[in-house]
Amino acid sequence: MTQIQVIPGDITQFAGDAIVNAANTTLMGGGGVDGAIHRAAGPALYAACEKFHGCPTGEARITSGFALPAKYIIHTPGPVWRDGRHGEPELLANSYRNSLQLTDEYGCQTVAFPSISTGVYAFPLDQAAPIAIRTIREFLRTAQHVQTVTMVCFDPVTEQAYQTALNA
Image (tube, rainbow, N blue to C red; front, side, top):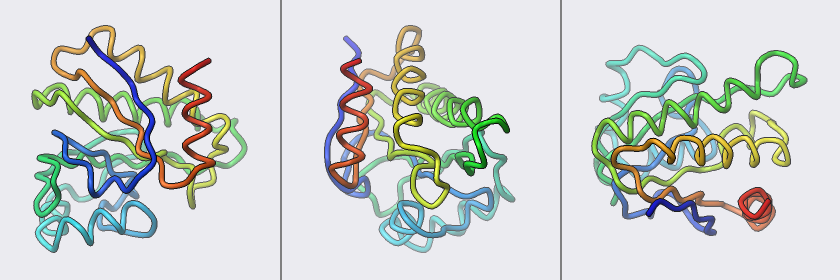
């Protein structure tokens, strides 16, 4: 039985198989959730990410979780919002889909996502949440291992947006 859940919290505390990092294309850490994950995982994460030489928007890479309670970190750069007419919705869906694909390939049953691209990348939350939930639902229909996908929301506004999308 697969499920999607929406919870408030700090993704660096998620004790599951994998968490997703809303990374930038360098994968070298940054602000927001990316910086928090890098700080919590420890300096070994930086060294592991260096080996990738970056990651294109919408794709995903995997590392160990290092000092985090999660076994793996999936790194995906989401799109920067311009006006919605430069492939942003498709790129956002790709970030979720490719992250889930890696999670499944590594045999993970549980994975937690932050709200990708809705912080400094300015993707409108009311558009991002339905894209995320729809993409996760589609993936779970054919997932081999992934059982539970958790949206970990940093604030009540984000939590409400994902809860609304989930109940739609």
